[in-house]
Length: 260
Image (cartoon, rainbow, N blue to C red; front, side, top):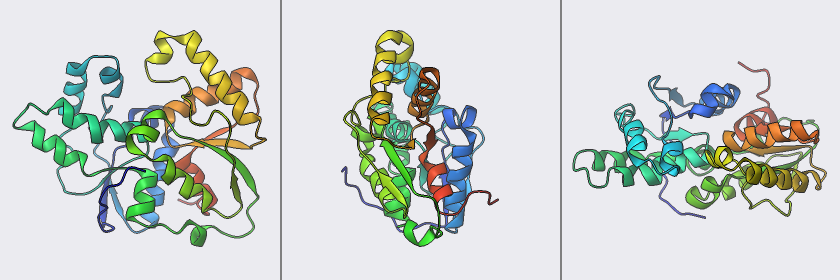
């Protein structure tokens, strides 16, 4: 696990929802807000936020990534934590935004200060809010067997696999099962899936087959890119593998389903 110093639980936070949540899985963003608000936090959502810049950055276009990041450096002006329901986007903001501006005497310090306030959602729930999921979960829920998928960026840059594991394992009535290809990439990789569709397709096929072999009832992940890739491929293959964002899974399993 990647160690860092965690602040005391704040009264207010920012949400950086990510473009995939905004456009394709808005329910995950709403459920992330509900999880935070239920703990008494006020959640602020700067409407001018956009992409974290990762597609451009990982495609070898740092200038385009720098322009995307520059447009957002002033959106999070208050010294509140920035909570991100995506390990890969959080990794981009925390580790790569400072590198994009490391030679800029004005924007460099601003990017580094912002990066220190970036937390992936489960990391924030576990280490900052110290959320007791077992105390939140109502009795009598049906048992579920799930596999947890952690994106490559979340696993290797943010070290948040351990946070997701801790959150899922704390839920009564939930059994997390591991599979042989859990640590492998799902094949999405942002623009990788567009540039190398045959390789990407083979990778996600292996991932789905390995997950289904466990007899799990669903796959949960904190990264929407992976969820969209795995979920759509499973439907295309006719595989019995429904997917759910971890924020929605945690909200549902702690009695939040149907709440406003």
